[in-house]
Length: 326
Image 1: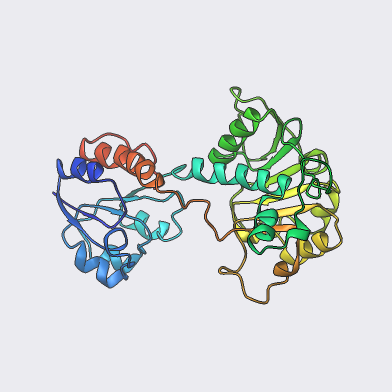
Image 2: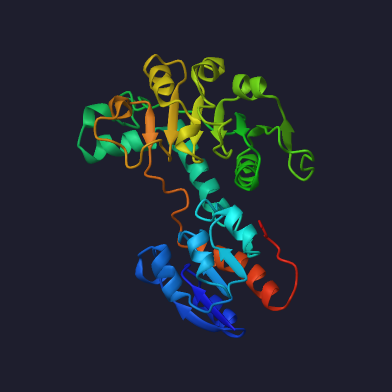
C-alpha cells in the first residue's frame, strides 16, 4: 500500500504511518509550497491514502487518482475538499477538529487580559519613549493609574457559539473566577460538566462584560455582529473575535468604537487580511489587532498528528473512522 503526506506531522507520526504503507512526502508540510491539483496528482500517483493540509481536492484530482480510498486533512476546516466530488468517487475523508482549540482559546484569554489591562498600549508608549503617556511612581507623585484597568474575576463572559474552542475558553475563564454564559442554537444537549449557563442571544449580548465569537462563518452568521448587536451590548463591554472576520460588520464596529458605544475590541481576524494600510481601525486607540495568530502554535503539529493518526490507523486496520466527514 502507498500513502502520500503533505501535512505537517511529527517524525514519530510519520514513522507510525510508515509501519503500514510505503510513504512519499512532499508539498506544503515539507517545501512550504501548496501543490496544485496537477502537482498533487503527480506526487500522489498510485496512493491509496493521502494526508493533506491545504491542497485542493476536486474531481480532477480524484479522476486521476483511481486508487485513492482515504483522505485525512490535518485541519479542522475542509474548505479545500469538494465534498460532492469525494462522495461521487466513494473516497472517505476525515479532518482534525479541535487541533488548534487550546491555542485559539489561550489567545482569546490573552486578548481579554490585554484589553482589560491596556497591555499593548502601555508597551507601545514605553517602547516609543512617550513617558508622558505612561507615568508611574509608587510614591504617589504621578498619576500612575492612568491606565486603570479591570480584573477578569467576577466579570461575565458571553460566548457566541459553544463548540470545542469555546468550551476550552470557558474552562480557562472559569479558572479566572469569571461567570460564563453561552449562546448556540445548534446544540441540542448542553454539556453538564461545565458551569456555563445557556442563554439567548439578547441576554448574552446585554449581560456580558466581554463577548467572544466562536461560531462558524455561514450565510446566516455573516455580519452577525452588526449595529443592532453592538447597540445591545454594555457601554463598557469588550468584543473579542478569534473566529472569522466576516462575522462582524466592520463599518458598524468602527462607528461603535469611535462613538464609545462599546469600550473596546480585540480582533485576531479581519475581513481583509493582511489589513489594508488605510483601514479605519488603525485610527482607533480602543482596539487591539493581531495578525491571525490564533492557531500559530508550534504545539499544534503534535495535536494534529495525534488526531490524524486516529483515523489513518483506523483505516489501515479496517476500523470505523473517528473524525469522518464523508
